[in-house]
Amino acid sequence: MDIDLIFKIAGIGILTSILHTVLQKSGKEEYAYLTTLVGIVIVLGIVVNLVSQLFTDVKVLFRLY
Image (cartoon, rainbow, N blue to C red; front, side):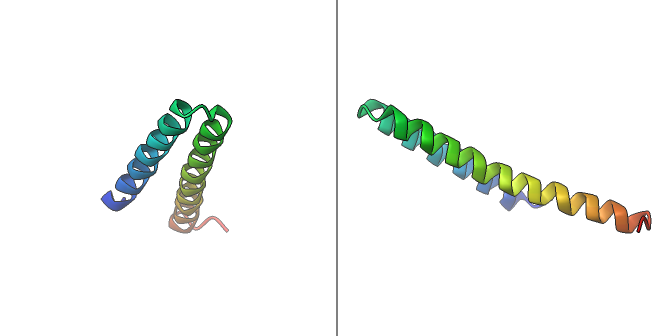
């Protein structure tokens, strides 16, 4: 596991929370929630890719074809 990945996910979370707060304070609640949803989808995409890679590695390790 690379520490760079943790910083990417944390950076996306911080950026999303800042955008959510700014948009909510300016009265654009719909865009604020949409921004949060996009941030969650991006992070979930990264995590799904990692889980897929984990399953592939386990499959190769135990020679499950």
